[in-house]
Length: 331
Picture 1 (tube, rainbow, N blue to C red):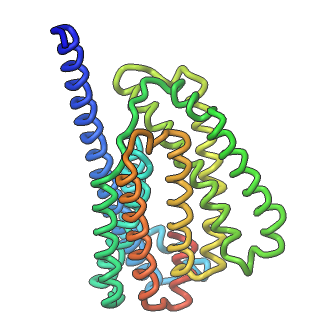
Picture 2 (picture 1 turned 60 degrees about the vertical axis):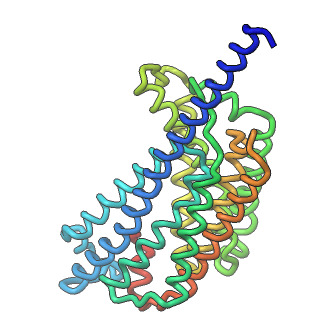
Picture 3 (picture 1 turned 30 degrees about the horizontal axis):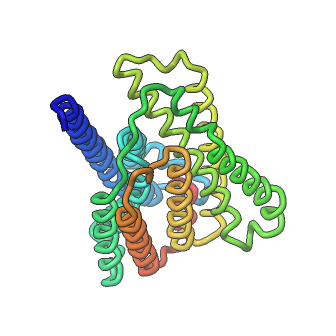
């Protein structure tokens, strides 16, 4: 091998190491933000519930049409905490792939379960503790084997990914499934089959995450000096995300109002996370260049987190009907 070939080979190796180091750094930022998001969102559930209980002790409850909680500082602290958590979650998608960020949403369940044990006197059973451990173990496996984020330099590149045939096929299939569920299944089975409302939430939610991730990358590039607000693609992603969020929240509220929260939460988490990872793999090609062992490890980590989530919800003490209705309407 001549000297020029050796130089080229050396430069390629250095470039690969730098790129890998940069990807790991970005994943670490995403992990930290996703973990912080779980802590804030999990805490917000408990803080808001404490505020609701305090407001209900001195006036009409929210479930009875009362709005005294709006004058309760504790409830507003909970709302602010939740907003901070959602902002951190949004920022996490800027740095890390959905395959890493989305499963870490289970951390909020751990935080709320532990805080509820101490502040709301909702006993955490032994199987619930095992569920927490499984969530932590599964999340650790996911973080260690998460795919690297591909570098994108403009929102136009994201638009190319969004309009590739494979993702257009996924989007068309998602819209078709949602329309069938809304127009045919909901009037007939919406009140009896939990998968109708959760199916709509999960399918639409996967598109929500893709558009939000595109917006996040556009904001990141803009802050770095490359203004993406002048591209019409950015605003299309904004309109899509707003529409999807409204539809998703509407049907999630219907699911919570119709079925037991302890049943809705794990099923929604499983289906939403699975579809989001699948959609991200198609659009952003998260698994491109990843070894089979890394892919299997992440899938095993996700299954472990899912098992822990189901255990946590399955061992929760049933809530009084009044509190359940109150939380379904406000959280």
